[in-house]
Amino acid sequence: MPKKRFTCVYLVLVVLLVAVFLFSLISGSNKISLVDALKALFGNADENLIVIIKYIRLPRILMSCTAGAGLAVSGCVFQSILRNPLADPFTLGISGGAAFGASVAFVSGLATITSFFVPICAFFGVFLSVLIVYLLSMYKKFDLNAMVLSGVVVSYIFSSAIMLMFALSKATNIQTAFVWLMGNISTFDEKMILFITFIVVIDIAILSLSGNIINTISLGGEKSKTLGIDIKKSVKILFLTTSFVTASIVSICGIIGFIGLMIPHIMRKIVGTNNVILIPVSAAAGAIFLSLCDTLSRILFSPVLIPVGVITSIAGGAFFIFLLLKSKKGALKGAL
Image 1 (cartoon, one colour):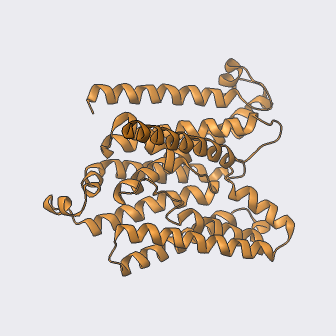
Image 2 (tube, helix red, strand yellow):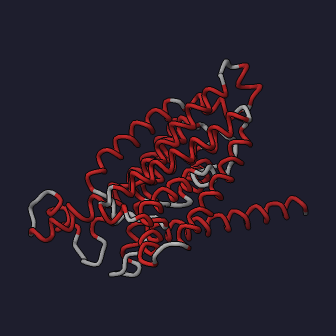
Image 3 (spheres, helix red, strand yellow):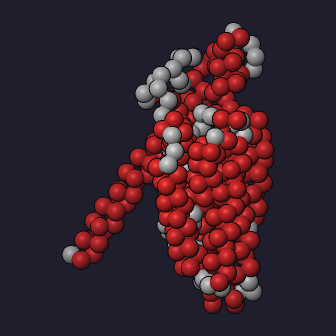
Protein backbone atom coordinates (compact mmCIF):
# COMPACT_ATOMS: atom_id res chain seq x y z
CA MET A 1 0.00 0.00 0.00
CA PRO A 2 1.44 3.44 -0.97
CA LYS A 3 2.60 5.51 2.00
CA LYS A 4 0.48 8.49 0.87
CA ARG A 5 -2.70 6.38 0.86
CA PHE A 6 -1.91 4.92 4.30
CA THR A 7 -1.41 8.44 5.68
CA CYS A 8 -4.76 9.56 4.23
CA VAL A 9 -6.57 6.54 5.70
CA TYR A 10 -5.00 7.09 9.09
CA LEU A 11 -5.83 10.82 9.08
CA VAL A 12 -9.45 10.03 8.21
CA LEU A 13 -9.59 7.55 11.10
CA VAL A 14 -8.11 10.11 13.51
CA VAL A 15 -10.69 12.72 12.42
CA LEU A 16 -13.48 10.16 12.84
CA LEU A 17 -12.16 9.20 16.28
CA VAL A 18 -12.20 12.85 17.41
CA ALA A 19 -15.70 13.31 15.97
CA VAL A 20 -17.03 10.17 17.71
CA PHE A 21 -15.33 11.23 20.96
CA LEU A 22 -17.10 14.61 20.89
CA PHE A 23 -20.41 13.02 19.87
CA SER A 24 -20.14 10.53 22.74
CA LEU A 25 -19.28 13.33 25.15
CA ILE A 26 -22.45 15.34 24.43
CA SER A 27 -24.83 12.38 23.96
CA GLY A 28 -26.87 10.78 26.71
CA SER A 29 -30.06 11.11 28.75
CA ASN A 30 -28.96 14.67 29.61
CA LYS A 31 -28.52 16.79 26.49
CA ILE A 32 -25.36 18.89 26.73
CA SER A 33 -24.04 21.33 24.14
CA LEU A 34 -20.52 20.88 22.78
CA VAL A 35 -19.39 24.19 24.28
CA ASP A 36 -20.69 23.26 27.74
CA ALA A 37 -19.17 19.78 27.46
CA LEU A 38 -15.74 21.20 26.62
CA LYS A 39 -16.00 23.69 29.48
CA ALA A 40 -16.88 20.88 31.89
CA LEU A 41 -14.00 18.80 30.54
CA PHE A 42 -11.56 21.50 31.59
CA GLY A 43 -13.32 22.27 34.88
CA ASN A 44 -14.96 25.59 33.94
CA ALA A 45 -18.63 24.66 34.32
CA ASP A 46 -21.34 23.81 36.81
CA GLU A 47 -20.33 21.13 39.32
CA ASN A 48 -23.09 18.72 38.25
CA LEU A 49 -22.08 19.10 34.63
CA ILE A 50 -18.44 18.41 35.49
CA VAL A 51 -19.47 15.20 37.27
CA ILE A 52 -21.45 14.01 34.24
CA ILE A 53 -18.71 14.79 31.72
CA LYS A 54 -15.47 14.06 33.62
CA TYR A 55 -16.50 11.29 35.95
CA ILE A 56 -19.26 9.45 34.08
CA ARG A 57 -18.97 9.90 30.32
CA LEU A 58 -15.23 10.47 29.85
CA PRO A 59 -14.08 7.27 31.64
CA ARG A 60 -16.64 5.27 29.67
CA ILE A 61 -15.47 6.74 26.35
CA LEU A 62 -11.82 6.05 27.19
CA MET A 63 -12.59 2.46 28.16
CA SER A 64 -14.65 1.84 25.02
CA CYS A 65 -11.83 3.21 22.84
CA THR A 66 -9.25 1.07 24.63
CA ALA A 67 -11.37 -2.08 24.49
CA GLY A 68 -12.31 -1.55 20.84
CA ALA A 69 -8.69 -1.05 19.81
CA GLY A 70 -7.48 -4.09 21.74
CA LEU A 71 -10.20 -6.46 20.51
CA ALA A 72 -9.75 -5.36 16.88
CA VAL A 73 -6.00 -5.91 17.04
CA SER A 74 -6.48 -9.29 18.74
CA GLY A 75 -8.74 -10.46 15.93
CA CYS A 76 -6.34 -9.11 13.32
CA VAL A 77 -3.35 -10.99 14.76
CA PHE A 78 -5.26 -14.24 15.39
CA GLN A 79 -6.57 -14.27 11.82
CA SER A 80 -3.08 -13.70 10.42
CA ILE A 81 -1.02 -16.14 12.49
CA LEU A 82 -3.65 -18.89 12.28
CA ARG A 83 -4.43 -18.13 8.62
CA ASN A 84 -8.13 -18.38 9.41
CA PRO A 85 -10.55 -15.50 8.66
CA LEU A 86 -12.90 -16.67 11.44
CA ALA A 87 -10.27 -16.71 14.19
CA ASP A 88 -10.96 -14.29 17.04
CA PRO A 89 -11.16 -14.35 20.88
CA PHE A 90 -14.52 -16.14 20.67
CA THR A 91 -13.51 -19.01 18.41
CA LEU A 92 -10.29 -19.52 20.37
CA GLY A 93 -12.12 -19.99 23.68
CA ILE A 94 -10.65 -16.90 25.35
CA SER A 95 -13.97 -15.13 25.78
CA GLY A 96 -15.55 -18.39 26.94
CA GLY A 97 -12.98 -18.70 29.69
CA ALA A 98 -13.64 -15.14 30.84
CA ALA A 99 -17.38 -15.78 30.85
CA PHE A 100 -16.90 -18.89 32.95
CA GLY A 101 -14.69 -17.11 35.49
CA ALA A 102 -17.05 -14.14 35.82
CA SER A 103 -20.07 -16.45 36.15
CA VAL A 104 -18.34 -18.23 39.04
CA ALA A 105 -17.90 -14.84 40.76
CA PHE A 106 -21.59 -13.95 40.33
CA VAL A 107 -23.04 -17.36 41.20
CA SER A 108 -20.78 -17.94 44.23
CA GLY A 109 -21.61 -14.52 45.67
CA LEU A 110 -18.04 -13.19 45.45
CA ALA A 111 -19.31 -10.31 43.28
CA THR A 112 -21.54 -9.13 46.14
CA ILE A 113 -18.52 -8.80 48.45
CA THR A 114 -16.67 -6.50 46.05
CA SER A 115 -16.99 -5.92 42.30
CA PHE A 116 -13.23 -6.37 42.02
CA PHE A 117 -13.72 -10.16 42.26
CA VAL A 118 -15.45 -10.21 38.84
CA PRO A 119 -12.41 -9.13 36.74
CA ILE A 120 -10.11 -11.28 38.89
CA CYS A 121 -12.20 -14.43 38.34
CA ALA A 122 -12.69 -13.56 34.66
CA PHE A 123 -8.94 -13.16 34.21
CA PHE A 124 -8.28 -16.53 35.83
CA GLY A 125 -10.94 -18.03 33.57
CA VAL A 126 -9.07 -16.69 30.55
CA PHE A 127 -5.82 -18.05 31.93
CA LEU A 128 -7.42 -21.48 32.30
CA SER A 129 -8.85 -21.47 28.75
CA VAL A 130 -5.57 -20.30 27.21
CA LEU A 131 -3.68 -22.95 29.17
CA ILE A 132 -6.01 -25.72 27.93
CA VAL A 133 -5.84 -24.53 24.30
CA TYR A 134 -2.06 -24.18 24.57
CA LEU A 135 -1.61 -27.70 26.00
CA LEU A 136 -3.91 -29.25 23.40
CA SER A 137 -2.09 -27.39 20.65
CA MET A 138 1.28 -28.48 22.06
CA TYR A 139 0.09 -32.10 21.94
CA LYS A 140 -0.66 -31.55 18.25
CA LYS A 141 2.72 -29.83 17.74
CA PHE A 142 1.04 -26.42 17.37
CA ASP A 143 -0.80 -27.30 14.22
CA LEU A 144 -2.80 -24.17 13.29
CA ASN A 145 -6.03 -26.04 12.58
CA ALA A 146 -5.66 -27.88 15.89
CA MET A 147 -5.39 -24.54 17.73
CA VAL A 148 -8.64 -23.27 16.23
CA LEU A 149 -10.47 -26.55 16.87
CA SER A 150 -9.14 -26.65 20.44
CA GLY A 151 -10.46 -23.14 21.02
CA VAL A 152 -13.90 -24.03 19.67
CA VAL A 153 -14.09 -27.15 21.86
CA VAL A 154 -12.96 -25.26 24.98
CA SER A 155 -15.53 -22.54 24.27
CA TYR A 156 -18.33 -25.12 24.08
CA ILE A 157 -17.19 -26.79 27.31
CA PHE A 158 -17.17 -23.49 29.20
CA SER A 159 -20.58 -22.54 27.75
CA SER A 160 -22.02 -25.82 29.00
CA ALA A 161 -20.47 -25.26 32.43
CA ILE A 162 -22.03 -21.78 32.58
CA MET A 163 -25.48 -23.12 31.70
CA LEU A 164 -25.13 -25.77 34.41
CA MET A 165 -24.22 -23.12 36.99
CA PHE A 166 -27.17 -20.95 35.96
CA ALA A 167 -29.55 -23.90 36.20
CA LEU A 168 -28.49 -24.42 39.83
CA SER A 169 -28.37 -20.74 40.85
CA LYS A 170 -30.68 -18.01 42.14
CA ALA A 171 -32.46 -15.83 39.58
CA THR A 172 -30.94 -12.59 40.95
CA ASN A 173 -27.40 -13.84 40.45
CA ILE A 174 -28.25 -15.03 36.92
CA GLN A 175 -29.66 -11.66 35.86
CA THR A 176 -26.53 -9.80 36.97
CA ALA A 177 -24.32 -12.33 35.24
CA PHE A 178 -26.30 -12.10 32.00
CA VAL A 179 -25.80 -8.33 31.81
CA TRP A 180 -22.03 -8.81 32.20
CA LEU A 181 -21.94 -11.64 29.67
CA MET A 182 -23.60 -9.44 27.04
CA GLY A 183 -20.75 -6.94 27.26
CA ASN A 184 -21.14 -3.92 29.50
CA ILE A 185 -18.96 -0.81 29.84
CA SER A 186 -21.13 0.86 32.47
CA THR A 187 -19.99 -1.09 35.54
CA PHE A 188 -16.20 -1.23 35.33
CA ASP A 189 -13.93 0.07 38.08
CA GLU A 190 -12.57 3.47 36.96
CA LYS A 191 -9.31 2.75 38.76
CA MET A 192 -8.57 0.09 36.14
CA ILE A 193 -8.61 2.45 33.14
CA LEU A 194 -4.97 3.53 33.27
CA PHE A 195 -3.77 -0.03 33.91
CA ILE A 196 -5.80 -1.55 31.06
CA THR A 197 -4.93 1.29 28.67
CA PHE A 198 -1.22 0.87 29.45
CA ILE A 199 -1.37 -2.88 28.76
CA VAL A 200 -3.33 -2.47 25.51
CA VAL A 201 -1.15 0.36 24.14
CA ILE A 202 2.10 -1.46 24.93
CA ASP A 203 0.88 -4.72 23.42
CA ILE A 204 -0.47 -3.01 20.29
CA ALA A 205 2.93 -1.34 19.85
CA ILE A 206 4.70 -4.71 20.25
CA LEU A 207 2.36 -6.42 17.79
CA SER A 208 2.69 -3.56 15.30
CA LEU A 209 6.48 -3.81 15.46
CA SER A 210 6.08 -7.57 14.89
CA GLY A 211 4.05 -6.91 11.75
CA ASN A 212 6.68 -8.26 9.37
CA ILE A 213 7.01 -11.47 11.40
CA ILE A 214 3.22 -11.88 11.34
CA ASN A 215 3.27 -11.29 7.57
CA THR A 216 5.87 -14.04 7.18
CA ILE A 217 3.88 -16.50 9.32
CA SER A 218 0.74 -15.82 7.28
CA LEU A 219 2.58 -16.92 4.12
CA GLY A 220 2.64 -20.53 5.29
CA GLY A 221 5.12 -23.12 6.51
CA GLU A 222 7.58 -23.58 3.65
CA LYS A 223 7.80 -19.91 2.72
CA SER A 224 8.32 -18.94 6.36
CA LYS A 225 11.12 -21.47 6.76
CA THR A 226 12.98 -20.09 3.76
CA LEU A 227 12.92 -16.67 5.43
CA GLY A 228 14.40 -18.05 8.64
CA ILE A 229 11.33 -17.72 10.87
CA ASP A 230 10.71 -20.27 13.61
CA ILE A 231 6.96 -20.58 13.04
CA LYS A 232 6.05 -22.58 16.14
CA LYS A 233 7.98 -20.35 18.52
CA SER A 234 6.64 -17.16 16.92
CA VAL A 235 3.06 -18.43 16.95
CA LYS A 236 3.38 -19.32 20.66
CA ILE A 237 4.66 -15.86 21.60
CA LEU A 238 2.14 -13.99 19.46
CA PHE A 239 -0.73 -16.20 20.64
CA LEU A 240 0.09 -15.61 24.32
CA THR A 241 0.69 -11.87 23.85
CA THR A 242 -2.60 -11.40 22.01
CA SER A 243 -4.46 -13.57 24.52
CA PHE A 244 -3.16 -11.35 27.32
CA VAL A 245 -4.57 -8.26 25.58
CA THR A 246 -7.95 -9.94 25.18
CA ALA A 247 -7.91 -11.22 28.76
CA SER A 248 -7.28 -7.73 30.14
CA ILE A 249 -10.18 -6.24 28.18
CA VAL A 250 -12.75 -9.02 28.56
CA SER A 251 -12.14 -9.36 32.29
CA ILE A 252 -13.20 -5.71 32.72
CA CYS A 253 -15.83 -5.16 30.02
CA GLY A 254 -17.40 -8.58 29.54
CA ILE A 255 -18.03 -10.40 26.29
CA ILE A 256 -18.16 -7.88 23.44
CA GLY A 257 -18.53 -9.80 20.21
CA PHE A 258 -17.74 -9.35 16.52
CA ILE A 259 -15.20 -6.50 16.83
CA GLY A 260 -12.21 -8.83 16.51
CA LEU A 261 -13.95 -10.61 13.64
CA MET A 262 -15.41 -7.69 11.69
CA ILE A 263 -12.99 -4.75 11.95
CA PRO A 264 -9.92 -6.59 10.53
CA HIS A 265 -12.04 -7.76 7.57
CA ILE A 266 -13.10 -4.19 6.76
CA MET A 267 -9.64 -2.71 7.22
CA ARG A 268 -8.03 -5.48 5.17
CA LYS A 269 -10.22 -4.45 2.23
CA ILE A 270 -9.10 -0.83 2.61
CA VAL A 271 -5.38 -1.01 3.43
CA GLY A 272 -4.41 -4.54 2.34
CA THR A 273 -2.87 -7.45 4.22
CA ASN A 274 0.40 -5.89 5.42
CA ASN A 275 0.15 -6.21 9.21
CA VAL A 276 2.63 -3.40 9.80
CA ILE A 277 -0.11 -1.09 8.51
CA LEU A 278 -3.18 -3.23 9.23
CA ILE A 279 -2.64 -3.56 13.00
CA PRO A 280 -2.51 0.17 13.92
CA VAL A 281 -5.31 0.97 11.45
CA SER A 282 -7.48 -1.80 12.93
CA ALA A 283 -6.77 -0.39 16.41
CA ALA A 284 -8.05 3.05 15.40
CA ALA A 285 -11.10 1.62 13.62
CA GLY A 286 -11.91 -0.63 16.59
CA ALA A 287 -11.76 2.32 18.97
CA ILE A 288 -14.13 4.31 16.74
CA PHE A 289 -16.57 1.44 16.29
CA LEU A 290 -16.92 0.43 19.94
CA SER A 291 -17.10 4.03 21.16
CA LEU A 292 -19.91 4.71 18.69
CA CYS A 293 -21.72 1.49 19.63
CA ASP A 294 -21.46 2.33 23.33
CA THR A 295 -22.92 5.77 22.69
CA LEU A 296 -25.82 4.21 20.78
CA SER A 297 -26.39 1.80 23.66
CA ARG A 298 -26.86 4.82 25.93
CA ILE A 299 -29.19 6.89 23.74
CA LEU A 300 -31.30 4.43 21.71
CA PHE A 301 -33.55 3.41 24.63
CA SER A 302 -32.70 6.24 27.04
CA PRO A 303 -32.97 6.33 30.01
CA VAL A 304 -32.59 2.53 29.86
CA LEU A 305 -28.98 1.45 29.26
CA ILE A 306 -28.53 -1.66 27.15
CA PRO A 307 -25.32 -3.72 27.06
CA VAL A 308 -22.99 -2.58 24.28
CA GLY A 309 -22.46 -6.21 23.25
CA VAL A 310 -26.03 -6.25 21.94
CA ILE A 311 -25.25 -3.39 19.53
CA THR A 312 -21.96 -4.90 18.32
CA SER A 313 -23.60 -8.29 17.76
CA ILE A 314 -26.42 -6.77 15.69
CA ALA A 315 -23.94 -4.74 13.63
CA GLY A 316 -21.61 -7.73 13.24
CA GLY A 317 -24.43 -10.07 12.23
CA ALA A 318 -25.72 -7.60 9.63
CA PHE A 319 -22.19 -7.14 8.28
CA PHE A 320 -21.59 -10.86 7.76
CA ILE A 321 -25.01 -11.35 6.16
CA PHE A 322 -24.00 -8.60 3.74
CA LEU A 323 -20.70 -10.38 3.05
CA LEU A 324 -22.50 -13.66 2.51
CA LEU A 325 -24.96 -12.15 0.04
CA LYS A 326 -22.18 -10.28 -1.73
CA SER A 327 -20.00 -13.40 -2.10
CA LYS A 328 -23.01 -15.37 -3.33
CA LYS A 329 -23.72 -12.70 -5.89
CA GLY A 330 -20.09 -12.78 -7.01
CA ALA A 331 -20.24 -16.56 -7.30
CA LEU A 332 -23.39 -16.33 -9.44
CA LYS A 333 -21.71 -13.82 -11.71
CA GLY A 334 -18.75 -16.14 -12.07
CA ALA A 335 -21.06 -19.05 -12.90
CA LEU A 336 -22.78 -16.97 -15.55
